[in-house]
Image 1 (cartoon, rainbow, N blue to C red):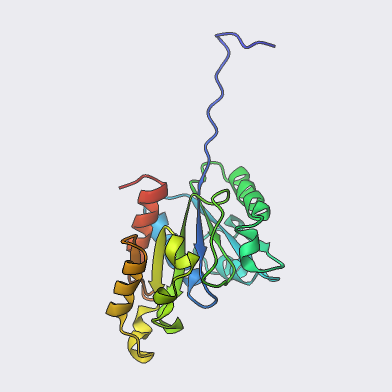
Image 2: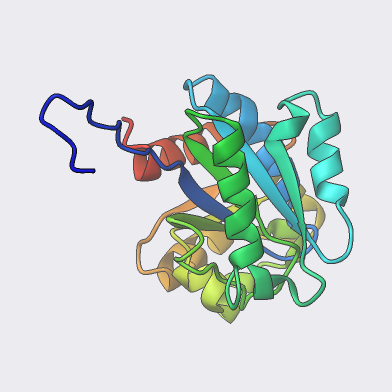
Length: 215
């Protein structure tokens, strides 16, 4: 049947922005997300999270128990293979999880996809996310920026986490950050300590500006 001019026009479907958080095992991805949840909530952002692990739901359960987010807003994907497989080669499991969250929570503005711990070659498919960050940590070594790798070079934001550990592991943090900025050609680098909250507001500002178009 052809709609008449008097028929109501359906409201356009809104789609939540989708961002990725990748990085090596132990770099602090989950801790950073835990710190970002209240920072983004304070900005009025309606969000949910999809975690990726190899064959467990460990990170999802950690977030559900945190008290920071409604447990139903956290879904888990078990990669069952190299972690970047389900965020790059075939992200359909993650895409479906994001779709499920959007269907369950009308008005959802942001879905955060946390990759399983991976290596410096980890990247996100742009079929899955609109924007992604890569998290490295000081304890992993100050040579990580010099080793480059797609995660360091191609991410929209590079986060250097665990800055408080620099003096304990013999890292010159100022030099590490300068080298990170140099290999990225001026693309953003933010130093954080997810446990203390240092730098987290700057990361939240970057997300809000880049994908939610908020100043």
